[in-house]
Image 1 (tube, rainbow, N blue to C red):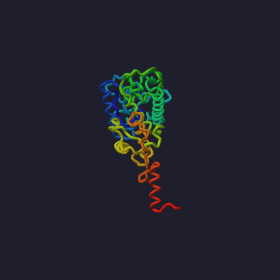
Image 2 (spheres, rainbow, N blue to C red):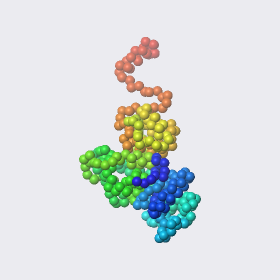
Image 3 (cartoon, one colour):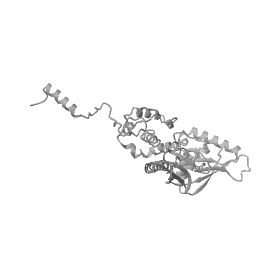
Image 4 (cartoon, one colour):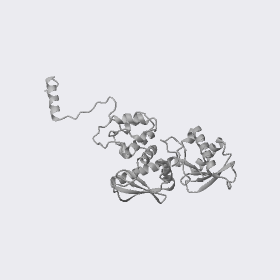
Length: 320
């Protein structure tokens, strides 16, 4: 399983791996972690992953006969599928490593910062459509033409067939963005085995917030949490306040955004994640949110109308 180099609620757009002999690998990984801690911008852009799915892999220059080479090679996978090789000179200085990460990110392409949120929204829409259409089915998730997992729609489970690609949500999302993906029906779900799919759904929901909320969340109907969404633990600092507002059963997306509790993308991401992880009640009769201080419109029954008419006559408010 990969070691994450970012805050858990963020999914970094770039993945880097270190393919060095053991006595050097840990040294370089510690150097990378130090660089990312010191530079907040870089820390939001990279995470440490596996060489099989990484955007960039650090290797020794030459035959590796030197105990510590002054330089390293970075093998980079471009978004267009081409491969590039960069030499990182003086890699043992943190400044050189920081500069190298900037160069590699530029080479990969800045479009990756929007590619993954777009992927997340598209994937969740596809999952939601298929789950409504096939409420008890298995879906085949393919990445780069390879079958990597079977998903059960009944219990939202995932049976991993490629454990390297499904080791963490971050690794799987990165591979899907880089190699393409499909999600298709693959037979009946007879209580499909597997681990919970919700950690992946949660990460995809948060990512998708950059591109807005899922269609079901744009209704004026109030959203009510079933309980405390456990996957929010350790997330963005605004999550606790969003949860508090949602638990009173009188808020929706529009009212939460208007309250200014968090940036729009964070609000949308949190709501997306809660929705696809089924943390909201399916109560269509929930009252619509109302603006603070707004009067609640009464639904008058015939008996109520008659009583009001009698009071108006007694008070002389009815003209003859």
